[in-house]
Image 1 (cartoon, rainbow, N blue to C red):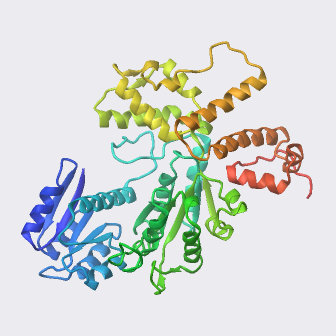
Image 2 (image 1 turned 180 degrees about the horizontal axis):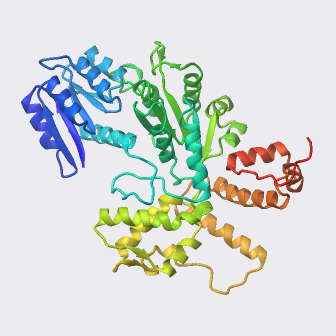
Image 3 (image 1 turned 120 degrees about the horizontal axis):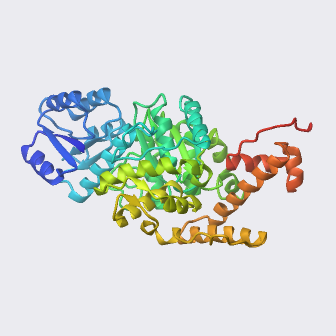
Length: 480
Protein backbone atom coordinates (compact mmCIF):
# COMPACT_ATOMS: atom_id res chain seq x y z
CA UNK A 1 0.00 0.00 0.00
CA UNK A 2 1.45 3.37 -1.07
CA UNK A 3 0.79 6.70 0.66
CA UNK A 4 0.65 10.26 -0.66
CA UNK A 5 0.39 13.55 1.27
CA UNK A 6 -1.12 16.66 -0.35
CA UNK A 7 -0.23 20.01 1.28
CA UNK A 8 -2.41 22.78 -0.20
CA UNK A 9 -4.47 25.53 1.38
CA UNK A 10 -7.32 25.30 -1.14
CA UNK A 11 -9.97 22.79 0.03
CA UNK A 12 -11.27 22.32 -3.52
CA UNK A 13 -7.79 21.41 -4.79
CA UNK A 14 -7.21 18.97 -1.94
CA UNK A 15 -10.60 17.34 -2.54
CA UNK A 16 -10.27 17.03 -6.31
CA UNK A 17 -6.72 15.62 -6.13
CA UNK A 18 -7.63 13.21 -3.35
CA UNK A 19 -10.69 11.83 -5.16
CA UNK A 20 -8.76 11.59 -8.45
CA UNK A 21 -5.80 9.72 -7.00
CA UNK A 22 -7.10 7.59 -4.13
CA UNK A 23 -7.44 3.89 -4.89
CA UNK A 24 -7.17 0.52 -3.12
CA UNK A 25 -3.41 0.70 -3.77
CA UNK A 26 -2.92 4.36 -2.76
CA UNK A 27 -3.92 6.13 0.46
CA UNK A 28 -4.08 9.92 0.07
CA UNK A 29 -3.86 12.22 3.12
CA UNK A 30 -4.20 16.01 3.04
CA UNK A 31 -3.06 19.04 5.04
CA UNK A 32 -4.18 22.66 4.71
CA UNK A 33 -1.04 24.29 6.15
CA UNK A 34 2.68 23.72 5.95
CA UNK A 35 2.94 23.03 9.67
CA UNK A 36 0.19 20.39 9.58
CA UNK A 37 1.89 18.72 6.62
CA UNK A 38 5.31 18.78 8.25
CA UNK A 39 3.89 17.31 11.44
CA UNK A 40 2.24 14.51 9.43
CA UNK A 41 5.59 13.74 7.79
CA UNK A 42 7.32 13.64 11.18
CA UNK A 43 4.76 11.10 12.42
CA UNK A 44 5.42 8.82 9.46
CA UNK A 45 6.86 9.79 6.06
CA UNK A 46 4.58 9.04 3.11
CA UNK A 47 5.90 7.71 -0.19
CA UNK A 48 5.55 11.13 -1.86
CA UNK A 49 4.35 14.69 -1.14
CA UNK A 50 2.42 17.23 -3.23
CA UNK A 51 3.43 20.71 -2.00
CA UNK A 52 1.82 24.02 -2.99
CA UNK A 53 4.18 26.99 -3.30
CA UNK A 54 1.91 29.49 -1.53
CA UNK A 55 0.69 28.44 1.91
CA UNK A 56 -0.89 30.63 4.61
CA UNK A 57 1.66 30.01 7.35
CA UNK A 58 4.93 29.46 5.50
CA UNK A 59 6.36 29.65 2.00
CA UNK A 60 6.54 26.39 0.08
CA UNK A 61 10.29 26.81 -0.20
CA UNK A 62 10.73 27.07 3.59
CA UNK A 63 8.44 24.08 4.04
CA UNK A 64 10.47 22.10 1.53
CA UNK A 65 13.72 22.83 3.36
CA UNK A 66 12.23 21.43 6.57
CA UNK A 67 10.86 18.37 4.75
CA UNK A 68 14.28 17.71 3.26
CA UNK A 69 15.86 17.87 6.73
CA UNK A 70 13.36 15.27 7.94
CA UNK A 71 13.90 12.92 4.97
CA UNK A 72 16.05 13.89 1.99
CA UNK A 73 14.87 10.81 0.06
CA UNK A 74 11.20 11.83 0.16
CA UNK A 75 10.06 12.91 -3.36
CA UNK A 76 8.28 16.27 -3.24
CA UNK A 77 6.21 17.46 -6.22
CA UNK A 78 5.82 21.24 -6.16
CA UNK A 79 2.64 22.72 -7.66
CA UNK A 80 2.00 26.39 -8.35
CA UNK A 81 -0.49 28.66 -10.10
CA UNK A 82 2.33 31.07 -10.95
CA UNK A 83 4.32 29.67 -13.87
CA UNK A 84 7.13 32.20 -13.69
CA UNK A 85 7.73 32.07 -9.96
CA UNK A 86 11.36 31.56 -8.99
CA UNK A 87 10.27 29.84 -5.79
CA UNK A 88 9.23 26.68 -7.62
CA UNK A 89 12.43 26.69 -9.67
CA UNK A 90 14.49 27.18 -6.52
CA UNK A 91 12.74 24.22 -4.91
CA UNK A 92 13.67 22.09 -7.92
CA UNK A 93 17.28 23.20 -7.61
CA UNK A 94 17.21 22.09 -4.00
CA UNK A 95 16.09 18.64 -5.07
CA UNK A 96 12.30 18.62 -5.47
CA UNK A 97 11.12 15.76 -7.67
CA UNK A 98 9.11 17.88 -10.13
CA UNK A 99 7.07 21.05 -10.36
CA UNK A 100 3.76 21.39 -12.18
CA UNK A 101 1.56 24.32 -13.08
CA UNK A 102 -2.07 24.78 -12.07
CA UNK A 103 -4.53 23.93 -13.49
CA UNK A 104 -3.01 20.47 -13.48
CA UNK A 105 -3.19 18.15 -16.46
CA UNK A 106 -4.56 15.01 -14.79
CA UNK A 107 -2.79 12.47 -17.02
CA UNK A 108 0.56 14.21 -16.61
CA UNK A 109 -0.03 14.61 -12.88
CA UNK A 110 -0.88 10.92 -12.35
CA UNK A 111 2.23 9.92 -14.30
CA UNK A 112 4.47 12.18 -12.18
CA UNK A 113 2.92 10.88 -8.93
CA UNK A 114 3.46 7.27 -10.05
CA UNK A 115 7.11 7.99 -10.88
CA UNK A 116 7.66 9.75 -7.57
CA UNK A 117 6.19 6.87 -5.55
CA UNK A 118 8.26 4.36 -7.52
CA UNK A 119 11.43 6.41 -6.95
CA UNK A 120 10.67 6.56 -3.22
CA UNK A 121 10.03 2.85 -2.91
CA UNK A 122 13.12 1.68 -4.80
CA UNK A 123 15.31 3.85 -2.59
CA UNK A 124 13.85 2.32 0.60
CA UNK A 125 13.02 -1.30 -0.17
CA UNK A 126 15.80 -3.68 0.93
CA UNK A 127 17.40 -5.42 -2.03
CA UNK A 128 19.18 -8.40 -0.49
CA UNK A 129 16.98 -11.40 0.27
CA UNK A 130 17.57 -14.16 2.79
CA UNK A 131 15.79 -17.51 2.95
CA UNK A 132 14.38 -16.67 6.35
CA UNK A 133 12.64 -13.53 5.07
CA UNK A 134 9.02 -13.47 3.97
CA UNK A 135 8.96 -12.35 0.31
CA UNK A 136 7.01 -9.15 -0.18
CA UNK A 137 4.58 -8.81 -3.09
CA UNK A 138 6.02 -5.45 -4.12
CA UNK A 139 9.56 -4.84 -5.25
CA UNK A 140 12.33 -7.20 -6.31
CA UNK A 141 15.29 -8.71 -4.48
CA UNK A 142 18.72 -10.17 -5.17
CA UNK A 143 18.30 -13.87 -4.44
CA UNK A 144 21.00 -16.54 -4.33
CA UNK A 145 23.54 -18.29 -2.16
CA UNK A 146 25.78 -19.88 -4.80
CA UNK A 147 29.54 -19.10 -4.88
CA UNK A 148 29.13 -16.58 -7.76
CA UNK A 149 26.44 -14.72 -5.79
CA UNK A 150 28.52 -14.80 -2.63
CA UNK A 151 31.31 -13.14 -4.61
CA UNK A 152 28.81 -10.56 -5.87
CA UNK A 153 27.67 -9.75 -2.31
CA UNK A 154 31.28 -9.34 -1.22
CA UNK A 155 31.93 -7.02 -4.16
CA UNK A 156 28.91 -4.91 -3.21
CA UNK A 157 30.25 -4.68 0.34
CA UNK A 158 33.68 -3.59 -0.86
CA UNK A 159 32.40 -1.07 -3.41
CA UNK A 160 29.49 0.54 -1.53
CA UNK A 161 31.51 2.67 0.93
CA UNK A 162 33.86 3.99 -1.78
CA UNK A 163 32.35 7.25 -3.04
CA UNK A 164 33.47 6.77 -6.65
CA UNK A 165 31.91 5.90 -10.00
CA UNK A 166 30.80 2.29 -10.49
CA UNK A 167 30.31 0.35 -13.74
CA UNK A 168 27.93 -2.61 -13.48
CA UNK A 169 28.22 -5.27 -16.20
CA UNK A 170 25.68 -7.99 -16.83
CA UNK A 171 23.41 -9.53 -19.40
CA UNK A 172 19.82 -8.39 -19.79
CA UNK A 173 17.66 -9.64 -16.94
CA UNK A 174 20.44 -10.28 -14.41
CA UNK A 175 19.40 -7.43 -12.07
CA UNK A 176 21.77 -4.56 -12.73
CA UNK A 177 19.45 -1.97 -11.14
CA UNK A 178 19.04 -4.19 -8.07
CA UNK A 179 22.82 -4.29 -7.64
CA UNK A 180 22.97 -0.50 -8.04
CA UNK A 181 20.31 -0.10 -5.35
CA UNK A 182 22.17 -2.47 -3.01
CA UNK A 183 25.35 -0.42 -3.45
CA UNK A 184 23.37 2.78 -2.81
CA UNK A 185 21.65 1.41 0.30
CA UNK A 186 25.02 0.51 1.85
CA UNK A 187 26.77 3.72 0.79
CA UNK A 188 27.40 7.01 2.57
CA UNK A 189 24.69 8.58 0.40
CA UNK A 190 21.93 6.18 1.47
CA UNK A 191 19.89 8.97 3.10
CA UNK A 192 20.04 11.14 -0.05
CA UNK A 193 18.04 10.67 -3.30
CA UNK A 194 18.52 7.73 -5.65
CA UNK A 195 17.36 8.39 -9.21
CA UNK A 196 17.43 5.81 -11.99
CA UNK A 197 17.21 6.42 -15.73
CA UNK A 198 17.27 3.98 -18.65
CA UNK A 199 19.31 5.60 -21.42
CA UNK A 200 17.92 3.20 -24.04
CA UNK A 201 14.28 3.90 -23.16
CA UNK A 202 14.42 7.66 -23.78
CA UNK A 203 14.71 9.13 -27.30
CA UNK A 204 18.18 10.45 -28.06
CA UNK A 205 16.81 13.98 -28.53
CA UNK A 206 15.34 14.00 -25.00
CA UNK A 207 17.97 12.12 -22.99
CA UNK A 208 20.35 15.06 -22.66
CA UNK A 209 17.53 17.25 -21.34
CA UNK A 210 16.40 14.51 -18.94
CA UNK A 211 19.90 14.22 -17.49
CA UNK A 212 21.13 17.82 -17.55
CA UNK A 213 17.88 19.83 -17.76
CA UNK A 214 17.17 22.67 -20.19
CA UNK A 215 16.45 26.38 -20.25
CA UNK A 216 13.24 27.89 -21.53
CA UNK A 217 13.39 28.23 -25.32
CA UNK A 218 16.30 25.77 -25.68
CA UNK A 219 14.31 23.87 -28.33
CA UNK A 220 10.79 23.64 -29.72
CA UNK A 221 8.40 22.84 -26.88
CA UNK A 222 10.76 23.99 -24.11
CA UNK A 223 8.25 26.46 -22.63
CA UNK A 224 9.86 26.47 -19.18
CA UNK A 225 13.09 25.67 -17.43
CA UNK A 226 13.54 22.00 -16.52
CA UNK A 227 15.83 20.65 -13.83
CA UNK A 228 17.61 17.44 -14.87
CA UNK A 229 18.46 14.33 -12.89
CA UNK A 230 22.04 15.42 -12.13
CA UNK A 231 20.84 18.65 -10.55
CA UNK A 232 17.83 17.11 -8.89
CA UNK A 233 19.85 14.36 -7.17
CA UNK A 234 22.43 16.74 -5.67
CA UNK A 235 24.07 14.93 -2.75
CA UNK A 236 22.69 11.58 -3.85
CA UNK A 237 23.13 8.91 -6.52
CA UNK A 238 22.17 8.68 -10.20
CA UNK A 239 21.97 5.24 -11.81
CA UNK A 240 22.27 5.21 -15.61
CA UNK A 241 21.19 1.92 -17.17
CA UNK A 242 22.19 0.97 -20.75
CA UNK A 243 24.82 3.72 -20.78
CA UNK A 244 26.28 2.28 -23.98
CA UNK A 245 23.31 3.65 -25.92
CA UNK A 246 24.11 7.31 -25.24
CA UNK A 247 24.70 9.67 -28.18
CA UNK A 248 28.22 11.17 -28.61
CA UNK A 249 27.11 14.66 -27.52
CA UNK A 250 25.59 13.35 -24.31
CA UNK A 251 28.70 11.25 -23.69
CA UNK A 252 30.85 14.41 -23.89
CA UNK A 253 28.70 16.23 -21.31
CA UNK A 254 28.75 13.20 -19.01
CA UNK A 255 32.54 13.04 -19.28
CA UNK A 256 32.82 16.67 -18.16
CA UNK A 257 30.46 16.04 -15.26
CA UNK A 258 32.55 13.09 -14.06
CA UNK A 259 35.81 15.02 -14.44
CA UNK A 260 34.81 18.43 -13.09
CA UNK A 261 31.50 17.88 -11.24
CA UNK A 262 30.05 20.64 -13.44
CA UNK A 263 27.65 20.94 -16.39
CA UNK A 264 25.31 23.35 -18.19
CA UNK A 265 21.64 22.87 -18.91
CA UNK A 266 20.70 22.46 -22.57
CA UNK A 267 20.41 25.93 -24.07
CA UNK A 268 22.11 27.55 -21.07
CA UNK A 269 25.54 28.97 -20.37
CA UNK A 270 25.47 29.01 -16.57
CA UNK A 271 27.84 26.46 -15.05
CA UNK A 272 26.18 24.33 -12.39
CA UNK A 273 28.11 22.46 -9.70
CA UNK A 274 26.76 19.16 -8.50
CA UNK A 275 27.76 16.56 -5.93
CA UNK A 276 26.51 13.15 -7.03
CA UNK A 277 27.71 9.58 -7.32
CA UNK A 278 27.21 8.06 -10.76
CA UNK A 279 26.58 4.36 -11.26
CA UNK A 280 26.34 3.13 -14.85
CA UNK A 281 25.29 -0.24 -16.24
CA UNK A 282 25.35 -1.97 -19.60
CA UNK A 283 24.90 -5.38 -21.19
CA UNK A 284 27.31 -4.37 -23.96
CA UNK A 285 31.09 -4.69 -24.19
CA UNK A 286 32.03 -1.03 -23.68
CA UNK A 287 35.71 -1.72 -24.17
CA UNK A 288 35.03 -3.16 -27.63
CA UNK A 289 32.66 -0.31 -28.45
CA UNK A 290 35.35 2.20 -27.44
CA UNK A 291 37.96 0.40 -29.55
CA UNK A 292 35.56 0.53 -32.52
CA UNK A 293 34.96 4.26 -32.00
CA UNK A 294 31.31 3.81 -31.02
CA UNK A 295 31.84 4.90 -27.40
CA UNK A 296 34.23 7.54 -26.07
CA UNK A 297 37.35 5.84 -24.78
CA UNK A 298 38.02 8.60 -22.23
CA UNK A 299 34.47 8.21 -20.90
CA UNK A 300 34.92 4.43 -20.68
CA UNK A 301 38.00 4.94 -18.50
CA UNK A 302 36.08 7.42 -16.30
CA UNK A 303 33.17 5.00 -15.83
CA UNK A 304 35.40 1.98 -15.33
CA UNK A 305 36.79 3.08 -11.93
CA UNK A 306 35.20 0.22 -9.99
CA UNK A 307 33.60 -2.60 -11.99
CA UNK A 308 31.18 -5.21 -10.77
CA UNK A 309 29.94 -8.12 -12.90
CA UNK A 310 26.66 -9.93 -12.30
CA UNK A 311 26.75 -13.64 -13.18
CA UNK A 312 24.07 -14.88 -15.60
CA UNK A 313 21.63 -17.45 -14.27
CA UNK A 314 23.24 -20.31 -16.24
CA UNK A 315 26.46 -19.74 -14.23
CA UNK A 316 24.63 -20.02 -10.91
CA UNK A 317 22.08 -22.71 -11.66
CA UNK A 318 22.48 -23.91 -8.06
CA UNK A 319 20.35 -20.89 -7.12
CA UNK A 320 17.41 -22.09 -9.21
CA UNK A 321 15.59 -23.83 -6.34
CA UNK A 322 15.90 -20.78 -4.05
CA UNK A 323 14.77 -18.45 -6.84
CA UNK A 324 11.78 -20.67 -7.55
CA UNK A 325 10.79 -20.68 -3.86
CA UNK A 326 11.11 -16.90 -3.79
CA UNK A 327 9.04 -16.26 -6.92
CA UNK A 328 6.41 -18.83 -5.94
CA UNK A 329 5.96 -17.15 -2.55
CA UNK A 330 5.72 -13.69 -4.13
CA UNK A 331 3.43 -14.61 -7.00
CA UNK A 332 1.15 -16.77 -4.89
CA UNK A 333 0.34 -13.53 -3.07
CA UNK A 334 -0.01 -11.50 -6.26
CA UNK A 335 -2.17 -14.06 -8.12
CA UNK A 336 -3.97 -15.49 -5.08
CA UNK A 337 -2.70 -19.02 -5.77
CA UNK A 338 -1.55 -21.82 -3.46
CA UNK A 339 1.22 -23.50 -5.47
CA UNK A 340 3.90 -24.69 -3.07
CA UNK A 341 6.19 -27.08 -4.96
CA UNK A 342 7.72 -28.05 -8.30
CA UNK A 343 7.61 -31.63 -9.57
CA UNK A 344 10.95 -33.38 -10.23
CA UNK A 345 10.12 -33.60 -13.95
CA UNK A 346 9.41 -29.85 -14.18
CA UNK A 347 12.54 -29.07 -12.15
CA UNK A 348 14.62 -31.15 -14.56
CA UNK A 349 13.30 -29.16 -17.51
CA UNK A 350 14.00 -25.88 -15.72
CA UNK A 351 17.56 -26.95 -14.88
CA UNK A 352 18.26 -27.92 -18.50
CA UNK A 353 17.18 -24.55 -19.90
CA UNK A 354 19.94 -22.06 -20.81
CA UNK A 355 18.00 -19.02 -19.45
CA UNK A 356 19.16 -16.41 -21.99
CA UNK A 357 16.77 -13.93 -20.35
CA UNK A 358 18.22 -14.74 -16.92
CA UNK A 359 16.26 -14.06 -13.72
CA UNK A 360 13.74 -11.86 -15.54
CA UNK A 361 12.92 -14.78 -17.84
CA UNK A 362 12.59 -17.11 -14.85
CA UNK A 363 10.18 -14.68 -13.19
CA UNK A 364 8.00 -14.61 -16.32
CA UNK A 365 8.18 -18.41 -16.53
CA UNK A 366 6.96 -18.82 -12.95
CA UNK A 367 4.14 -16.37 -13.58
CA UNK A 368 3.10 -18.29 -16.72
CA UNK A 369 3.27 -21.60 -14.86
CA UNK A 370 1.16 -20.35 -11.94
CA UNK A 371 -1.56 -19.12 -14.29
CA UNK A 372 -1.68 -22.54 -15.97
CA UNK A 373 -1.35 -24.66 -12.81
CA UNK A 374 -4.41 -26.59 -11.60
CA UNK A 375 -3.07 -27.96 -8.33
CA UNK A 376 -0.54 -27.11 -5.66
CA UNK A 377 2.42 -28.44 -7.67
CA UNK A 378 3.96 -27.11 -10.89
CA UNK A 379 4.00 -29.89 -13.48
CA UNK A 380 5.75 -29.93 -16.88
CA UNK A 381 2.54 -29.11 -18.76
CA UNK A 382 2.32 -25.83 -16.77
CA UNK A 383 5.58 -24.57 -18.28
CA UNK A 384 5.92 -22.45 -21.44
CA UNK A 385 6.09 -24.62 -24.60
CA UNK A 386 9.70 -23.75 -25.44
CA UNK A 387 10.85 -25.40 -22.18
CA UNK A 388 9.28 -28.74 -23.08
CA UNK A 389 11.80 -29.69 -25.80
CA UNK A 390 14.92 -31.02 -24.07
CA UNK A 391 17.30 -33.38 -25.95
CA UNK A 392 15.74 -36.82 -26.37
CA UNK A 393 16.67 -39.29 -23.64
CA UNK A 394 19.60 -41.47 -24.65
CA UNK A 395 20.21 -39.45 -27.81
CA UNK A 396 23.88 -39.45 -28.80
CA UNK A 397 25.41 -36.81 -31.01
CA UNK A 398 28.77 -36.41 -32.66
CA UNK A 399 30.85 -33.71 -30.89
CA UNK A 400 30.45 -31.22 -33.74
CA UNK A 401 26.67 -31.87 -33.84
CA UNK A 402 26.44 -31.35 -30.07
CA UNK A 403 28.27 -28.01 -30.33
CA UNK A 404 26.14 -26.95 -33.29
CA UNK A 405 22.97 -27.81 -31.37
CA UNK A 406 24.02 -25.89 -28.25
CA UNK A 407 25.02 -22.78 -30.21
CA UNK A 408 21.94 -23.02 -32.45
CA UNK A 409 19.67 -23.27 -29.42
CA UNK A 410 21.35 -20.26 -27.79
CA UNK A 411 20.89 -18.19 -30.96
CA UNK A 412 17.26 -19.29 -31.34
CA UNK A 413 16.47 -18.39 -27.74
CA UNK A 414 17.90 -14.91 -28.29
CA UNK A 415 15.87 -14.56 -31.49
CA UNK A 416 12.70 -15.76 -29.74
CA UNK A 417 12.94 -13.09 -27.07
CA UNK A 418 13.92 -10.49 -29.71
CA UNK A 419 17.20 -9.75 -27.92
CA UNK A 420 19.66 -7.23 -29.25
CA UNK A 421 23.44 -7.78 -29.47
CA UNK A 422 23.01 -11.49 -30.27
CA UNK A 423 26.58 -11.76 -31.54
CA UNK A 424 27.91 -10.35 -28.25
CA UNK A 425 25.77 -12.66 -26.09
CA UNK A 426 26.67 -15.83 -28.01
CA UNK A 427 30.35 -14.90 -28.36
CA UNK A 428 30.59 -14.05 -24.65
CA UNK A 429 29.08 -17.43 -23.75
CA UNK A 430 31.55 -19.30 -25.98
CA UNK A 431 34.51 -17.22 -24.75
CA UNK A 432 33.56 -17.80 -21.13
CA UNK A 433 33.52 -21.60 -21.54
CA UNK A 434 36.65 -21.68 -23.72
CA UNK A 435 38.77 -19.48 -21.46
CA UNK A 436 37.68 -21.30 -18.33
CA UNK A 437 38.57 -24.72 -19.81
CA UNK A 438 41.94 -23.60 -21.20
CA UNK A 439 42.95 -21.86 -17.97
CA UNK A 440 41.95 -24.90 -15.94
CA UNK A 441 44.04 -27.08 -18.27
CA UNK A 442 47.16 -24.93 -17.74
CA UNK A 443 46.41 -24.49 -13.99
CA UNK A 444 45.90 -20.73 -14.28
CA UNK A 445 49.09 -19.91 -16.19
CA UNK A 446 48.03 -16.96 -18.35
CA UNK A 447 51.19 -16.96 -20.48
CA UNK A 448 50.65 -20.59 -21.48
CA UNK A 449 46.91 -20.05 -21.91
CA UNK A 450 47.45 -17.10 -24.25
CA UNK A 451 49.88 -19.21 -26.30
CA UNK A 452 47.42 -22.10 -26.64
CA UNK A 453 44.61 -19.71 -27.57
CA UNK A 454 46.75 -17.89 -30.11
CA UNK A 455 46.15 -14.46 -28.64
CA UNK A 456 48.29 -11.97 -26.77
CA UNK A 457 48.34 -11.96 -22.99
CA UNK A 458 46.95 -8.40 -23.06
CA UNK A 459 43.96 -9.60 -25.09
CA UNK A 460 43.49 -12.54 -22.70
CA UNK A 461 43.51 -10.24 -19.68
CA UNK A 462 41.03 -7.89 -21.39
CA UNK A 463 38.65 -10.77 -22.11
CA UNK A 464 38.94 -12.12 -18.57
CA UNK A 465 38.15 -8.68 -17.18
CA UNK A 466 35.17 -8.06 -19.48
CA UNK A 467 33.74 -11.51 -18.70
CA UNK A 468 34.41 -11.20 -14.99
CA UNK A 469 36.41 -14.43 -14.84
CA UNK A 470 38.70 -14.95 -11.86
CA UNK A 471 41.88 -16.95 -12.46
CA UNK A 472 43.00 -19.35 -9.77
CA UNK A 473 46.73 -19.94 -10.08
CA UNK A 474 48.02 -23.39 -9.20
CA UNK A 475 51.52 -22.82 -10.52
CA UNK A 476 53.71 -19.74 -10.68
CA UNK A 477 53.49 -18.08 -14.07
CA UNK A 478 56.56 -17.76 -16.25
CA UNK A 479 58.29 -14.40 -15.94
CA UNK A 480 57.20 -11.84 -18.51
